[in-house]
Length: 281
Image 1: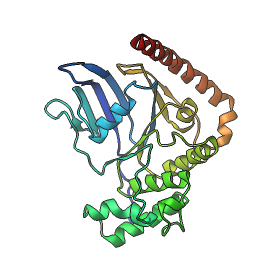
Image 2: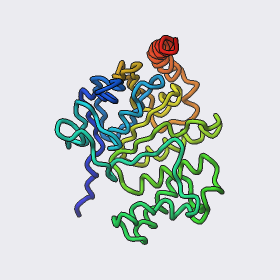
Image 3: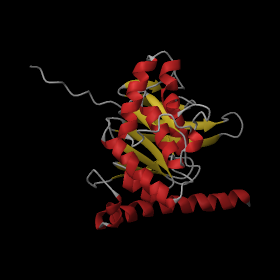
Image 4: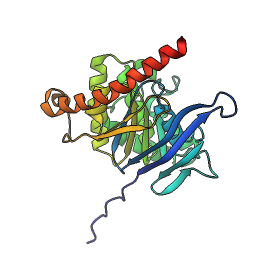
């Protein structure tokens, strides 16, 4: 009997010497300059840095929401954007979870999750619902199929958005500060929930955040960006075993990594603050 072969690893991202200049003919604001990152398939890679450093610019370029000025971005060896193709084509292989959420309030949880693949004709209603229910069990949402977004907590709503993204079977899940604005307790629960989902999938997670503790707790690797124009200052491997839970937060290894990342981030935050003061003056 032939054994089932594992799925080939997907979601490897190669960002090579990418620059993004806004309004190049007038103000010429360089958001990102000569930025390079290599993200392995299946990695939970966190981008951390001060406000305005270009984190969201990179995420949007991968998603295909805007163009790059120069450089190249590849997904699994295929060019997303680069010379002759400045803007990637959005696709179901790269799905974004936004910080402000985007659930349809008039649709049930199950209908929200299945809407995309059904309306795009990629799945039948029955197929989408079967997959959605499986993913909901994985995310601890079983039994909420008939609820509406207004009946859910902020944490549950965010889990629904993540499940909605995963139903598309993406190679990469792009998370734009998904837990910003949550209270500390809800955020802590969501961190553990996200890690449980990550551990059960083969999806590459590309997450951006200002929160250093969040970055170290979640990440396989944390890349710190410089102040604008953004480039990678340092990438730090998070050598903490998985699965992880809140008990990791008090360990010596975690606190040591926190101190390492904080030192790198603080230098750039100070530069951003000083630059902002000069601009105001």
